[in-house]
Amino acid sequence: MGKKRIVVAMSGGVDSTTVAAILKQEGHEVIGITMQLLDYKDAEGGCCSLDHVIDARRVAQELDIPHYVVNFIDSFKELVLKDYVAKYESGKTPIPCVLCNQYVKFDLLLKRAMELGADYLATGHYAKITNGDGTYSLNKADDENKDQTYFLYTLKQKELSKLMFPLGSLKKDEVRELARSLNIKLAEKPDSTGVCFVPSDNYRDYLISQSAFTEKEGDIVNVEGEVLGKHRGIYSFTIGQRRGLGIATGKPMYVVGIEPKENRVIVGEEDKIYSNKLLAENISWVQTNNQIELNSEEPFEVKAKIRNRHREDDAIVTMKSDTQAEIEFINPQRAITPGQAVVFYQDKKVLGGGWINRML
Image (cartoon, rainbow, N blue to C red; front, side):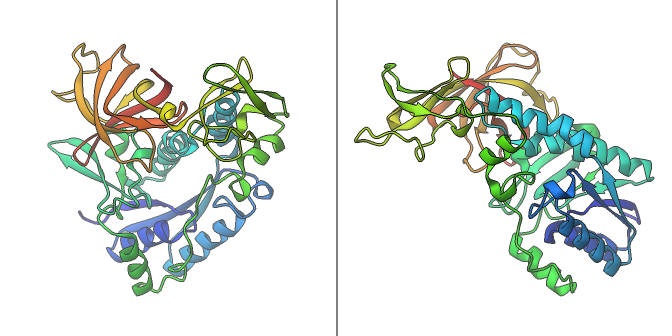
């Protein structure tokens, strides 16, 4: 690849900083862009904070590359924050990173990069893109402990053709060592964890601070409907949760269901949080191929996983419509959670995925 103009999404962390340094060292024309997603007063301590913007700008100066901050506050609120609140309100457990990637990073930011005449947008994601005969594939990173393809399954051919993930072939410790060798001052900066816009990762306080919820007492019941206790809001619970239930039954109990209309939380013993089947909606495919036809009436086999930290397992997908599918796992899965994503794999290749609507 000859010299290219590449926009790098710089968050102020070691990964995106190392990406910018690598591409600059390779001789490309590099432009750094940092997204402002929140008012800085609302992002204290998080990876959207002013400190991270300052870190990104300082590194850009050290690398002698242009650096811009783009304001996506309104778009982020409309496309990500509203969904985050709505899912908790409906008894689901959201993963805002998927929507942020889909609608902000790889739509709005990608368009901004193209407006700057860039050939590519590069990020610090741990994933790999391959190109065979003009068809792009999204693949797992070599460092499976850092692999982020679960959050990227909505990417399609148009986006993949304009994206670069330079860290996909590196382990995390190799990235830090490379950063040290390039004299990057952020080489030892800790990774950000949790949801970027939730201070101290306390989502309950965040929801209340947004005036999204008020405490509304309801029943905690067992699977037979017997009332075991009271709760102060369904948003404080997620499927599979054991701690913080506020009930005493003499044996471990887990959240097995949330009923927003009845304002009720259902608990049961551990065996009740396992299931083989789920219904997924808004199905999205990275590419169509001979094995997977969007309107196929024939079930097909995949590897699938129901959350980022789960290992994928054998499953059978049956399309119910163009955008809805029933997924049946060969082995029972623990705590299938509405609002999370189910992502399909074939070896290391990402096929696509969808949003979990409910267990079946």
